Image 1: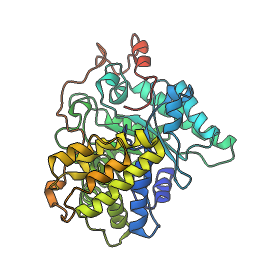
Image 2: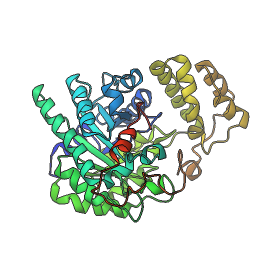
Image 3: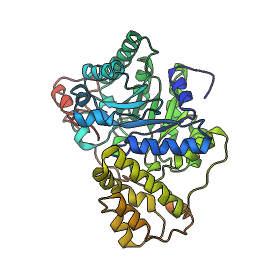
Length: 399
């Protein structure tokens, strides 16, 4: 991790390995984070886990103490560091959310989301559209960092680090990542994580790792780490990204869908230990049952079983499983039904190889980004946009 031990490097060191679980709405809840941590601990004898970030939390909903939002920020007693990602468009609201998290001792690391490409957010100027308005972007980062420092000091603790996650820009003609990266560093962000796609690309095409390397070079004088995100499907991809870009770590998103054991492989790889082999179907179903059980524990037995449905296709990708079994698992209402359908599989199947790797989850191709009228005319002009920007912060969490 280099000789520099600023707060970003210290945070990576605390995780033990330079691996971060990307926030994913409806995925990175407490159950999945626990499952992934357990895989990393098992692979390293408990010496390393990485950093596991919550689902995206809307600052306004947090300040208003929305019941669902308060549930989403809950962490396990052994979850360390406790990492929460905040999404916000108003510096004052973001500052209030940061203050609440530290006052109530709920967090050890705050990540700011400037990468969401969802149309309902960008058409109001939020998410990956926001860094284009550079004054507002800088103000939000400054408010979060300053509040974290002041509130932490008031409680007699080291400053809670604030990090930034973003995309390359709105589209190829409106790239923001170099300027926004510099601004984040100047305002005290502990690290910058960059997804090597524009908002216009959504999740299609190929992530631009060369752009990640350019950001690493751009921020080298500031002494803060840059983390790379995009197209990390295996532990080999993670190693390759770091070698190719010079990034200090990796952020893993869609690559872990139905593959929580990837965190064990990553932890072992970065710890110089023997890397666990990919599991056969019998071992996969053991992990599936564990995931379903944890979801039931965290969300309740009925909600947990139904929430597990969306994971089925990811877990079983590449394996030979009868259509009726796949369909049955995708409609389960109880944990007993999960067991019943698994019992009907031929479990003596080895790992399928390449057919089981590669893109999972959202893979939409690029399209024109929904933006407020005139948004791209002037990066310094906010007049006339403030009411729209405020509407970009939804009253509920997720996204």
